[in-house]
Length: 469
Image (cartoon, rainbow, N blue to C red; front, side, top):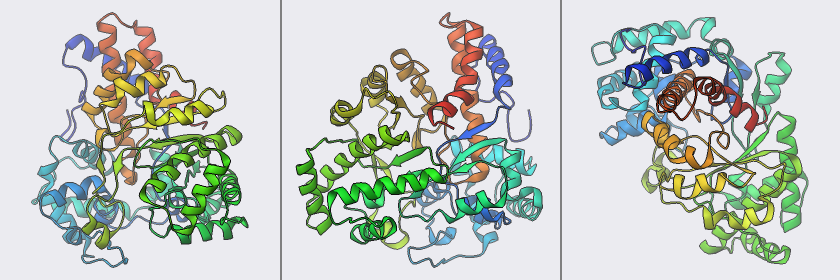
């Protein structure tokens, strides 16, 4: 056992199951990482500049960290999180780090603690606990490492054994950093993902102006329905040229619709003119999930639906600091009724893959496993966001495997903005899955050879296949 990490962490307590889990894990621990959905910044890989100070790398961009600290009464300004206007109240990285270190104990028992301890030990060689007394030791060690060339983004990409990583860009993004990566001659595979929420959700800030920008980028008339759809086709093609294999849709619900052309055109007229009611906005988002699925049938892009988050729950924080500041909260989400219009339209198409994510764990056994267990286009994404955790992963396997099996899931993705946490997150998933497989062997539901093959599938092959990477 090392100072921060137990070599057998997360494995079953039963000695025989633990021995088998350890054996399975050794067979997958060094497999390449497929990171098919996340939010790392492509500029890092394009410019390959040194990362900023430790606080700027680890604390400031990570909503898992600052939302917990906010819950303890520590404001975002004190943590250096930029305000909506781009200003920063606290720019002293060491001061931010000390505040984080003094409160590190509040992460006990959380996945964030696991990820951070893994990062501190395996990446920076730290073997004492982080607290107020060791804050400066940590800061100086990490800062020294970040000054070295072997800690630049491309070097870490290679050190982490990342085979492919997908970033996520909005539909209006020029993708200049992806172009710069391609033109640099570097062989690391960094692709984009098409995220059109800003031009699909009528309640997204600046929606009318976003539509005008979409039209200007594509030379399409986004004032009318068919021109708007053609603009999406052109942007999807532009993203595919930059390596995209997938789209992503962060809707508040999983509602879909399949209106007639005339009904959809009339709805779009209301939406584009700014005359849409809240019901119109919801119906338009629902229609556009179906339209995006139809386009995926045409162009082969994998579709991801991340439904069920009440985004920006605190109006005050949204006003002061903007989006993605830790105040996105899970809500109840229906799938059986919600997805039926889309599935009636394209659910049996052989070239379509739709990966479903949820923040409503109650839907797994009742709805999602049963849907994915029969519709050939559907796959279940791994536990997401608040459930990207040890117990969340275990609950996911227990709730879905009996009905959907393993092969209607897509392995693991880390969904992170925190680049150093990528190997830590994959390590947690691999350990938990190996423990689950070991217990299936011990209970007579699998033979050991099957478990060994499944360990490879869950750690690597399923994600590579599902995302067409």
